[in-house]
Amino acid sequence: MRPLHCLVAGLLAAATAAAQPDAVPPRFDVIHNPDVYFQDTPQRTLNSVLEAIGRDRYDYLVAHLLDPAFVDARLGATQTYFERVAADQIGQTLAGSTMRAADLEARIRTVGLRLNVQNLVGQIRHKLGDEPENLRDLRRFARDGQFQTAGETATATLPDVKDRALYFKKVGDRWFLENRKEDRPPAKE
Image (cartoon, rainbow, N blue to C red; front, side):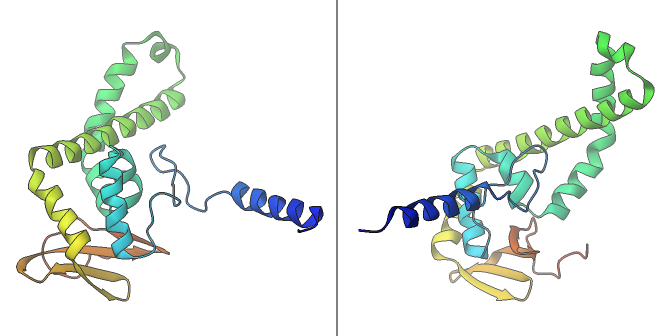
């Protein structure tokens, strides 16, 4: 039997480790959850993508599992439109008419980004819902794929499929699924 002080020390160490904040900040108000969605290898990232889809966590998929450069570029292309929508919505409220100009601009940017992210999440959800073969392919890559890693990039292929592959890139210590279909060098950040 272990002494009580060993048990207490063990509990304190576990509590301290659990209290350590994740080094990855929230993105689009979505908290990073490395205990459920692993990204230490391309294979585990793909499994995390499937887990997020299975849990209807498309927001997590966009915020933390898809290539951040792709997500940011996609949002950047539509941000102006969503800021106009946000300005119209905010302008119709009493709060919008009483805000200082600087606060109003910040609020429009924040609401515009939130609407933009929701739109991208919805597009991905609908694409996978409308084209279920894409989800079947992702599952097959996870189950049967052959993963080749070369430095900060990786490719998953299927032995019997020559015209499709999945591409991953490593940013920091996390792997992300890229949104590309052909074998080419990834875009520089």
